[in-house]
Amino acid sequence: MEGFDLDPRLAGDTLAVTRLESGLLRLMDDARWPWLILVPAVPGAAELHDLTPAMARLVHEETDRIGAALKRATGCTKINTGALGNVVRQLHIHIIARFEGDPNWPGPVWGFGERQAWRPGQAHELIRRVMSEMERLQAEAAQQAMRSM
Image (tube, rainbow, N blue to C red; front, side, top):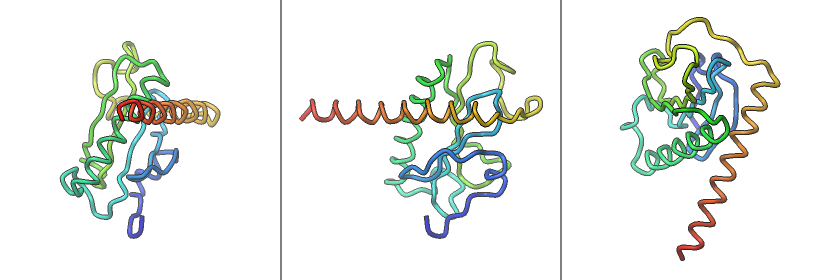
C-alpha cells in the first residue's frame, strides 16, 4: 500500500473493518444501513477503469464476496453496489444492505436525513458477522474448487 493514503473524508465518515488483498474495507458510520465501503489501495485511482485488469478483477471478486457476506449477515432484501465518487474522488465502492421499510426505501441512501453513528457494540457485532460470512464464503469456494479438480 506504498503511496496510498485514505481520503480524509472517508477516514472521518467510516470505521476500519479490515485490510483485504485489494485494499481497505470500511464501515460507514451510519447505523441506519449496514453500509460497507471497499477502497482499492491504488494511489491516484478515481475510476474503476484506472485499475489494471488484474486489480479490477480482484476488486470485482472482493466486492461480490463482500456483498454476499453482507446479505447473509443481515438477511437484507437487496444489496446496492456502486462507485459514485462525486464528492470523494478517491475510488471507493459502496456495498449497502437495504431492507423494505428502511429509512428512505426504495430511494437512495445518499443525502437522506441525518446520519446516526453506530454504537460501538453494534458496529462490532455487524463487523463480526460479516467477517464470519466472508470466511465461510471463502471456505465454500475452496471446497467447490477442490471438488471440480
